[in-house]
Image (cartoon, rainbow, N blue to C red; front, side, top):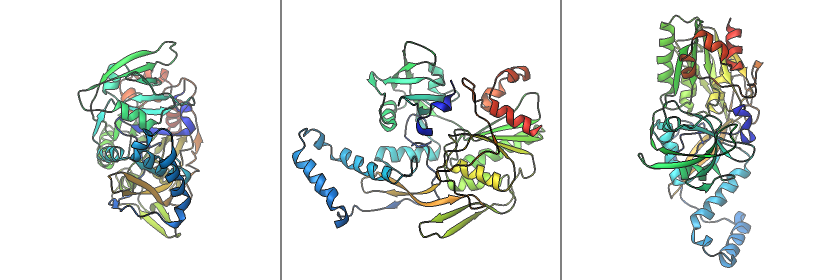
Length: 414
């Protein structure tokens, strides 16, 4: 079954089962964060504009029958804030994080994780499922597979549960165990799989040379703080292998940091802007290409899909507007707001869309996404291959492996 077709409302969560991103990453996906120091804000007294809210709040506090619920004021307060952020309509981007989630977000951007190691999504039946386990992760070693549906966590049914809640049940200290009740794809009976949590070390970038060709295949998993450094290393490695063309894969890449989006894009561009940024007062700020990119001329194809979001969309849009390479795959997610992080008084965080980013030519990506030059979708049951997968194959094995998006990229470069 095609994994990406099972994403609930096209939202991808990119995480290591320690924190909620998104990716996401984390919505749905890992947020695209500007280079700003989080601002601290004090709790203001209620204003006249919120009088109806506080009237309802007092009625609930004084009269609701289940008093035990009212003993958890933080949960009600957090739910109210989430309701406001969701009403803004910046789906999967502007969001509220509890103190634990805020810590996890920072860990993610720093590239340090503890958990079981997997990409997770939500299917159309509101069930969490595994997009893919990370290579060598505790999840993979325990037998977790792409497409697995998570039915229970330590005996608790998680169907319909918010992914924040699922994550909070799965995450834990290194060396501790968590038992997932899993329904493998095409299976009729669930199985229990116990996984020992560990530190997850996942590179931002991986690469290989496609067997039987002179084409380098580079995957950008996320735009974390080490993305550009790892990309430069990968580019030097594939160039040393004598490649004559490149495929850069940002499928299911939920984004990351603004400075990394600019730096990564600049490896392939020599002049102009990487993006524009428009604030609430229509002021435009341009982010120019950085000098000394090391892959300015090599033929290039970028792979993308519905899970490509945020900083990954900046990259794709910059490549397309500069006519630097061909985009193949599906229209991207459309997460086009710039998030400013505001740290609240209790350590929780509001990630608020304060600006909108545009492509170099001024195209709006928010809610529209970036459209491919050549549209190709994965067929039912077709795998999404990574450099790790391809690097283990012979040329004959690769020909039989599928991934029509990757094959379309190879044909375009030929």
